[in-house]
Length: 288
Image: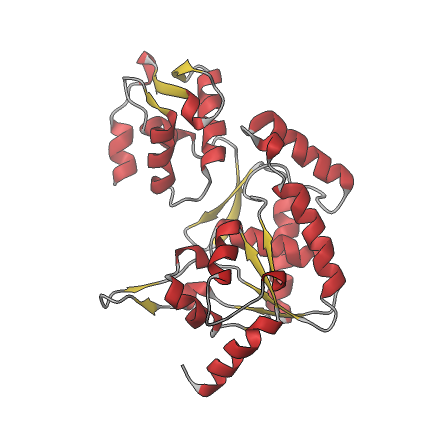
């Protein structure tokens, strides 16, 4: 790390840092080399990969999203992240004057959608914004192997300052591209959004992952959490466990799977294939 990079890191504690998720906030706070005070880190936690996102900048749009989560996602009624994010974004608008924003957005669907939504909300503000292209950062582990930190969440703690040294001003072109991305997925009106081929955000039908969930079901009852865990790995965590839990319960309700227990949280029930759905070749196709 050269002298200029060290100077940049030293000044980082005076910036406003935006991260996506509680874990990302904890990782940034624990980095003693950056020494960022907690009041300068704002975490946004709403998972914008799932659920209606039309007009989230209006009260009506937020109510529609909240009602959908309440009806479809287990324990969503006690999740305050959506309403808290609204307040945090309004707070950002109040404090950004003459301050630099460092947005720790990696190259995952969740973080791309999150920064796109945030920039849309801030589109009328003349801001100094810095980001890093996580997909082009290569870091070396102690054993000599290299990895790309697609999100700060998977970065080794000692590598967080190295990621910070890659931050650069966000160009007007890139900012507009992300704003247009948000406008595009909003207009498409689908309930799910994924990162296709690690490149492009696509809106997809809500049954997008259903065939993979079914592929990991067996002829005997198995815990829902186990089926969902295997599916998460297979889809490279392109959705979270609550989303897959919603879809697994829908497969039971549509009589494509059988269940035992209460169709609520992941730990509350088990699933198995219906006799007519026995298809071992699905597993082989998923594994290839």
